[in-house]
Image (cartoon, rainbow, N blue to C red):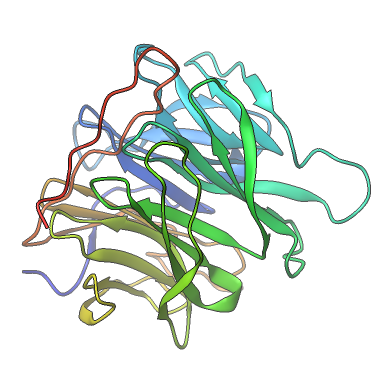
Length: 297
């Protein structure tokens, strides 16, 4: 298995995030530019812009039953997007007067078909961020507050456990998730990183958590009990997002904030690993829901 991630695509993104394998295509975002991208057939060609919106685009998930439609954490809220880039807003809970200026950050659908997304202050004001859940009927609920830079979340295959990072605090939390209501149990500290900030994450087929650690040039795999299993290194200091396409690990990175970016900062990286992953779940509006796979454990 490779211990060093390699870059093959020519693009260098300002803030590469939200990389997801849908089962049909690999997508990622250049967050501050509001671009949703996919990979070309030939790795030496530039990434392909799927759509662009005039606000930051944190992450997307496909919408079940609506090919070409995405649910997105974008701007100050949650919207549906089609390939023409026209947002259909479900809610903009962070578009409010007073307090710090806010934006949405990372987000993902869970195996039960709900969509989850975090918000943060542009100036990273402590405790200003929240975690939101979008239910099947399209309602947007604030489920956690007091966060600073929420990243993830990531879910186990049965959807009953959620991992969520607060990057500014260097902590990844674990919550039980009620399968029927989506209500969260109390936060447990899963891991605390040193020398960097936990960022994007994904759970593999063995239930281990792959975690990008911003500022360290590393991606780390943690076993379900929190044991550090392995470290992969990449020639970019700010890894941001991770996903698994079968046994290929993809990692996004960022140039933002670097006074002298290196030639690999902002690149999309790949490495072959020995435990595969699963496609990202879709957001499932009412009438399209199905039960997630149950864990054998």
